[in-house]
Length: 240
Image 1 (cartoon, rainbow, N blue to C red):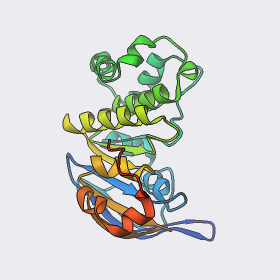
Image 2: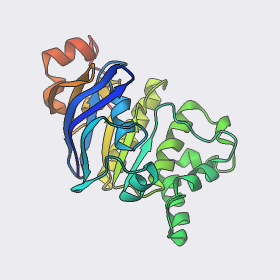
Image 3: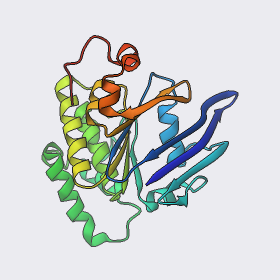
Image 4: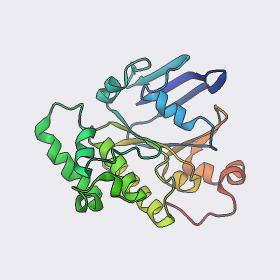
């Protein structure tokens, strides 16, 4: 579905992504783990056109999207729930969801998709007319994912969906990630909680200082000594 090849990105004099190559297979969950500053969010922002690459290729279903404006990339079928949620805090939950569908022309189907989001996230339905700024962190994360789903993406990019959440909410978020994927949406997941990410991932890439240093199935990397030492620590009791 998504093929990234030899992607290079610079921030001033900093080489943020150093010839990254990776593939995202259709209907799979692909995850990218790594420390803060490794370049994970930069990769997603480059895929969505928010960051300009210095070179390389990003093909979506064989079509080059590198250099496309962000709204066109969304129309192609890619949506992102960004790090930090970034919901529109001064408008309602319902209006946030409508913003996720701003690029669509099939207006008659939008209400059906809002109901689909409410079915996936019942708490959002209860708070449909509340200002998004009054939601808890976990509810805002659900709203960010629901808003992204409103564009009917073929590929959903999730940037640190568990950031700042309590363990019980992390389990809930990853349960929903599995559900969304099982219903047919491909997911590229960026996540610091390596344990939860590897449990949900079909395939995983490990990113360090702008380079991919390791890759394999989620199960393979869960059992890899290097990954355990660098990212999993002593604990192995928080599967998604």
